[in-house]
Image (cartoon, rainbow, N blue to C red):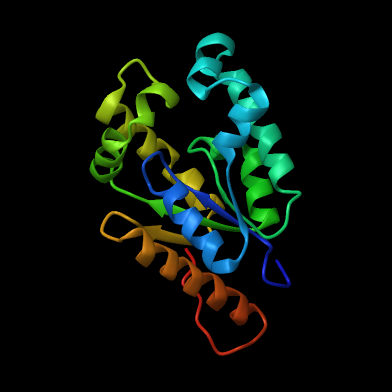
Length: 192
């Protein structure tokens, strides 16, 4: 149990759930720094995620992802948007739970796919994770990872019908409420 307000706020969830957009707003409101774990991974590797998958394979990518998460967990006063698959490894799930406040941003496969389709970086940066690709891949992956996201999440928020501003406000309210409650203040927690 975290005894004080945690100095790390993690955003977890599938591609297209709004982690990077909402994360920047949260960091700004908290006066913290924002980091996208995928950006950190690409910078450290000197290549895109798609290239890492193509050249090194998924296992090597997941090794890099775990290493970056470990490094990011050493920071303070950061909002961190994680990669969608960071929850696949049990050690990563444990690290997320122990190192900060994890918010699972949910979005329906339809909403996530629409966002990804509108993002010009999707093709270049995000590799297909199965032979199916596209909407069907996203739907399958979201369903398969749901219990893993749930295991890590201190708070769950469906972003499909929320603006990034409204999502950031809801997360800050839940974060403050959760930790006031842990100190015995009269606030109710909205965590999942």
